[in-house]
Length: 564
Image 1 (tube, helix red, strand yellow):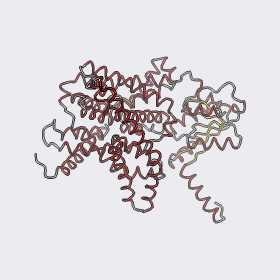
Image 2 (cartoon, one colour):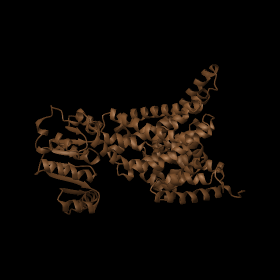
Image 3 (cartoon, one colour):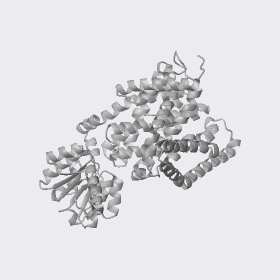
Image 4 (cartoon, rainbow, N blue to C red):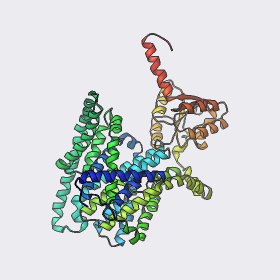
């Protein structure tokens, strides 16, 4: 079918059908991403009816990749990763290796070459960041300790895959078997040059970009024009990605990722994320539609057993390996199940790697079709996997003594040291949570020489606190054993500095059962919830917005010599 305006026709058909299929997917309570992929299948060359211009769709998807990775970089917090680095970094790398070996072994059994097996294994070893973040948000776990570990884990995956995308092109000849022993020296020179270019780009971005991007955003913000600010954000992302590719030979994805990371250093990073979100979302949709256009649905009928086996690797092999790794780092069963369930799907990087493998002649087209089919199914089923975590944990707890022990691992950090001073064991404050709010409370208690014990779910924070001589116990304070270890029965006050009030009710019940006279202090960001908590008599409630308004009012009145 001839197109007089192929760009407009492709945009209209892709976005229009993506809207319809995404709407249907959401109504069916599956990720909208599945609908976008199916929209691409419907306008692709492998299904009857209208066929969109696949070349233009491919170019639009490149912009989608850039903006998708720009968004990942914009939300990438090095500080958050450092907090969970001891489990996220080695855990994610071990999981990638395990999943890659399983996937590569399976594809090699089917007759794939070494290069194809490696690309196939890598493609099914990395989860979709977008799907994972939405799943955690839907479950209300994004800001929990389990959420921080899971996000840190997938960020490490993303960084590892960005490096893989850089290294695969120069290694393509060797891993495909096309290079001879005589070209090994040239190969290593090529790899060294590639890595030097990547390092040079990273150094330039860290040294120059870390100052340049915040300055540019500040100048754009000073104009007072929303359009100029948005244009500055988008132009910065696309320009850096393009120049990174042309001058340093790195991928568009890596360039855009670092552009996002550097913009995050600006005080306007949240506004940059907000202003660029509609355009990022639109082009991300085009990326997923273009991926769907490459999928041949006949593979489902022709190779159902292979698809089933790939799904077993993604939804059983990877989660089991992940859970074992998390448990080996002495985290509880709930954390292991949450991280494992989060990674039981594949997404963006899987598509990018598969596409790169096909373009380099490493991966056959049917290998990419298997990856796309497995991605569609795993993404669609992932919400069900998340909903099954709670019932599965309860079933394991009832049926297995081992599971009950894993819920409360024999961890030295879960108990106060026997050398803890007596002042921390009687008349103390039990402080639940050592985040932004908890840290400020702890600093004030220290400054006034008020004894306290911190109950915290982050093992690394507990280690750091103990190194500073602060009494701290590791675990979820909704578990009575954690509050018992904090000597709640002899405490004067329980301060719950975490926003999760579902767990807070259990903490208060435990505290008042063991210590009926204890005073309880809570925090909330919801006015209705604050009123309800006060009516229930759960404790003294501080509303975030209320305290902010009170502080600002007091400052204003002080300025005029008045009193509140």
